[in-house]
Image 1 (cartoon, one colour):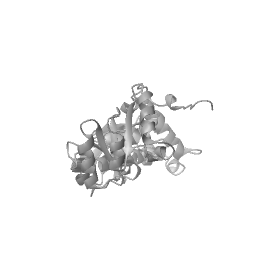
Image 2 (spheres, helix red, strand yellow):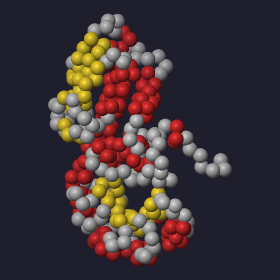
Image 3 (cartoon, one colour):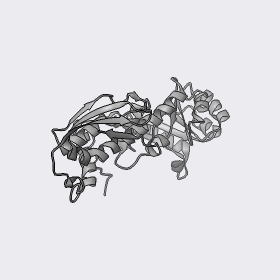
Image 4 (tube, one colour):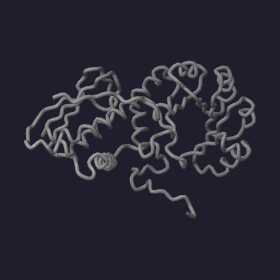
Length: 295
């Protein structure tokens, strides 16, 4: 290809250059759910539920089996609707709500056979989105009000929009959505060039884009002080070096910490005064939340 060409515009809602502020449209939810159902039902449908030859109507309770931040209810609702548009899905807890073990999340009324067909796909959406929202919220509470918790591009392929939506539900903040959102000069870029040279090139070609520069030593940080970029990303630093780096940089730059951040370390990292902490694990390693359907 002569230029980088992407098909993202076909399925991503339009948001200009601020792609990270995407809101989930009905069309996006519907198309995503259709893909998931096709994965489950191609080529012959649910051959087991097909054994049920009656049209018995049941009312089913969707219940959380653990404390969580619930998310993905619109995806679940759309799943049942695509299988049978006569199924009623009554939401009792909105996305972003806190639920406890045993809480009623939604009521589902319709033909038992069709509810069974949609059940697993609907629960998969709920479990995954709620899992990310819940894990994000754990970090947010520990970090405190002065430090933002951010996700990264460490997302499951084709699920980035959904995962970043889940982060927002948990009280987190979205980092750049894709490689064209902002300049992010990292160690692997520097390995092929010079840090200061790359920063100066980014400034020259900025055109309204944010510039973030990663450093892993105080010496590196000092080498770029005074250059007009936005954020300094302090990677894998000790708490002591983080604290010193924040003091050096905070007057002129937004500060961000990253690198092996855990629930045990996030509070100490936040105490250094960084503005943001980016954490890959909230999207790539968040455990699923357990839900059940109860007749």
